[in-house]
Length: 275
Image (cartoon, rainbow, N blue to C red):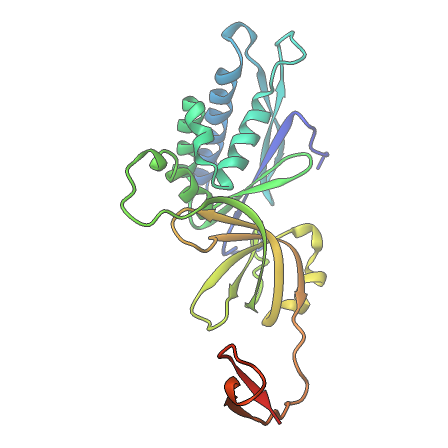
């Protein structure tokens, strides 16, 4: 497969549960819906930034079967060197919506409808990954929910108002086994108490060998926490770093007694330990 250029994007479609010897083969109907939806969204992005006379041309590229992949390369006809790229707008808006900046699409109504069509084309039995020349973005159930939230911020709030956006944070908990079976590597991080779990998305460039030691371990993860506005906790964490939490190898025996501070030399009403 040829490298991805800065004026193109590739789309990978993979079954969540592969069957048969060809693990990357997808149903024709699924391929057509995703292909048509991405193509329509690119055309919508082009109409947002270019006049009809200066509309970009798009060509299909990067076709493959296993894994199922297709791409589009943009040839700009605009003579102004400052003219924006349609693929660049697609990328910027997709990334901003993914990170809970829902208002960005309200500036581009055509592209908003294009993303809604992509969300409608997503099949839960498949993982769709958009690849750029220097990054990638999963179009999955999380992305679909993010697109569905566009415009909801203009409605009167019917519940508590939580933060929506992305923040670099760290979390500690027990990481379940990491799922490498699809194009998006994910895992569940159970926070203290085990009742709350956060979805973690891992960078595939780290490689399985680097991530395997952390499965089913108590870990600390740091990365981009994406808050959707529906909760005080993030719905997804894009993991940048991960490390195992140290645990005591032997028990510590601490003995003592409590006495009011007024018995001692303090007069602030606090309690203290004494031997």
